Length: 328
Image (spheres, rainbow, N blue to C red):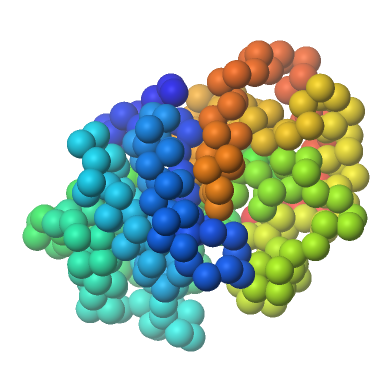
């Protein structure tokens, strides 16, 4: 495992970390505590020391599992969670300091922790980024010892740019992968100026970039890759990075031709992200321990050559960029 600095938090974190949206099993299945514990312990056993969760993941069960495992380990594990998505309807007016403080306190209770290493606003409506009183709350929570750092998770580059105008924002979690490249062109350089940690989420475009899906692949009715392809439940960009599924498959076929001896493209896709020094860490999800090990196999492959990276970027330019680049 290699480690990178998480911006001005000064945390030294695993560059391949763990997202826990599906830590208790695959989307649509009941939460399995045994699966969650095995998966989290496997990640930590292999050098992962940064775990990202959220209060809405499995309605708090993900946080509970993360807290249980972290408390059982002797290693220093950095815990990041997110708040805000419980607000219903999910509109700016629902974001109030008292409401958010209660979310933070509830997360601490679920995880059995005294302090959160990182609390992140969970993809709030754009208007929230223009409300200083929301960001001021987290200074008070830091003074109270409930959090160490504030970050944001965003849908759009423009939201990320606005967020880092607040001096207490230390990290930005943003969708970034081979099929979502706009952040590297518009955001990374600005984040670098302010020593902002960048957490790359949805690194495999909801599994599309593994190369293991085809036109016959089916998804459970409760899996967002089934019900949210058009953004019916939440932002379309969260599912397959907003890419039309069939178009994405065509682009993936081109990737497979570039790497004919690598049937699972996941480590290739992760290595492409790690080629950007501005990235602090990647948080691929996993619903099986084999997924964790697949993600960590990035270190078993030869380093991508500039020629390979250029060829990968050309696939993005030809297949993906025209339909999504301007949207997020």
